[in-house]
Image (cartoon, protein in one colour):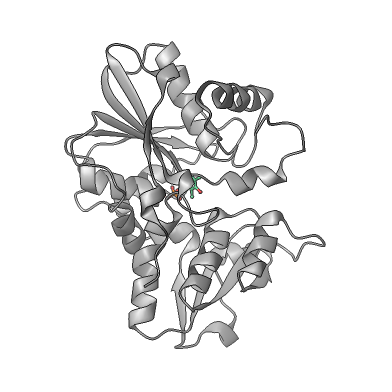
Length: 291
Ligand SMILES: *Cc1c(COP(=O)(O)O)cnc(C)c1O
């Protein structure tokens, strides 16, 4: 299987988050590939492997107009000689988002679904073929969690790990690998998504492993933002020279910064996983960001 270049990943220390008792690092998964970045490659790898091993020709998966999972799947499929179909939530837009345009350039075909059919994941019968391999929305599932367990983080190297949470797949993979000796914290980017607890637990090898979800850093809800978040993104870029995306990583770094300010973060070694997703910023008004 063709892989992205994992040697581009670095671990950087965040000086503005650290002091003499606390070292805060960030895992730069944003650097691996322009669109197959962050946890997306890690979540996809075992699905793609299974599809290739079982001689499937085409990947079918689900997502919205701005889904990082959709564009990453399109690119990973092209890289591996697979066709791809994106089942997209909502009517066909007059103008495609940057995400959909990019996915189309990577050869993905779209099937637009009204919101009710999408919610029920009703698959048109003409797509129910042996040659098609289905990957759940966001790569959610055991293979996605298993892939996330292969993120390049040494076991036991950190006292706490923080990540942004959408479907909870990556977080489950982190808990499965590190959860017994490291506190795993997830920042939910959605408002009131209290099913998340259960969705993460479903993917745990040992459902008694503790983990913490934070629900108060959504800035209005999924893909919503406020001035405080945009100001933070600009300030963080000035201080650390690290770009963030407004849907996931900015909410994550913002949350950790707030916890530091409120003295809620312990000492020791802390890792923040930067999952990239920077292509999402293309849907922001021009001039809002200083990078
Ligand atoms: C998809 C994504 C996440 C969330 O991953 P889940 O496994 O769905 O929880 C976090 N950050 C970025 C940038 C992403 O693209």
